[in-house]
Image 1 (cartoon, rainbow, N blue to C red):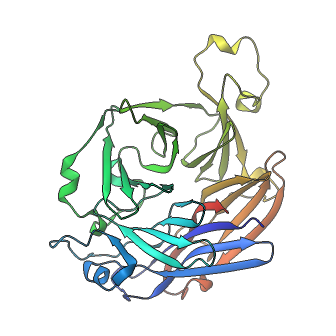
Image 2 (image 1 turned 135 degrees about the vertical axis):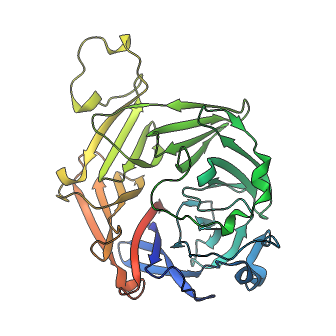
Length: 358
C-alpha cells in the first residue's frame, strides 16, 4: 500500500523559548486507513548535541559554536529514501528513519548543514544544500564531508574553503523569504548531473559533476511563478509554485504538451526553446480557491500529491491535496490542524514542506 509522507515544519511566536529533548511533530503519514503524526527531538544549541549520545553520527559542534539568539523553525524540510530508510532534512542535520516503524536510528550532522531544503540520498551518500551560500554538500553516512562546491551568480562552480571555518548549524535565518543568490530548493541526482530548482531564477541549475560546470534549464511560462519543488517522473518535470500553482514541463523536442495551454502554430523549431510548460491553477480545479501556500510535490500511480496552506497568520491548518495526473480532478483533501502539533496560542505557523511516497 502506498503511503504519502509530508514533512512538517513549524515555528513559535516566542523565538527564545526552548525545551531541550522535547519531541516535536515532524512527519505526517497518510494512507487509505492511516493518519499518523510522528515526533522527533530537535537539538538546537551545542550543549543539546552532547545529550544525543549514540544517536549522533558525524561532527560534534565546534568549540566556539554560539547559541542561537533566536531559535530557527522545528521539523523536517526535504525528504528522500532508500530501500530501508527515510532521510529527512532538519535545520542542522539529516535524520535517518526506519521505514518499518518510523523510528529514529541516527542524527547525521556536520558543520555544513544549515537549513537544507531538498535533500537527496542513496546507499553511499547524502547530498544537501547550504542554502544561504548556494553550496552543494556531499556527506557520507558517517557524517563526514566528502566534498562541497558553490555556484556563483555567473554560474562558476568553485570550492569555497572559507565555508569550513564556520559551524553553520548554529547560524540563524534572521528574516523571512529566500536566502542566497539562487535559493536552491529541491535537489536530484541523475547519473553524473545534479539538478537544482532555483526559486529566485525560476529555473533548473544543472551541474555536470565531471566538468564542474553549471548551466540553466529554462522554461517558457505563461504566468508569473515562484518555483519551489521540482521533480522528474519519466520524461516530465512537476513543480510547485508557492502562490498556488502546479507547473508541468517537458523538453520541447519530445513534449506532447501544448505550449502555454494553446495549440502550436507555425514552425516553433525556428525559435530558441528549452522546457515547455503547462500551468495548473489550483483555484481552477475542484479545490476551487487559491491556497495561501503551496510546496512539496510527488507524482505516483496517476496521482499528483501537493501540500498546501499553513502560512503565517492564516487558518490554523494545512492540507495534503491529491489530483488526477491527467485530468487534475480532486481525488482527496486531508487537513492537519495546528492543534495536533501544539498549543495554537504559541504557534506562529505550521505547514507542509516536502512530499514523498513509499
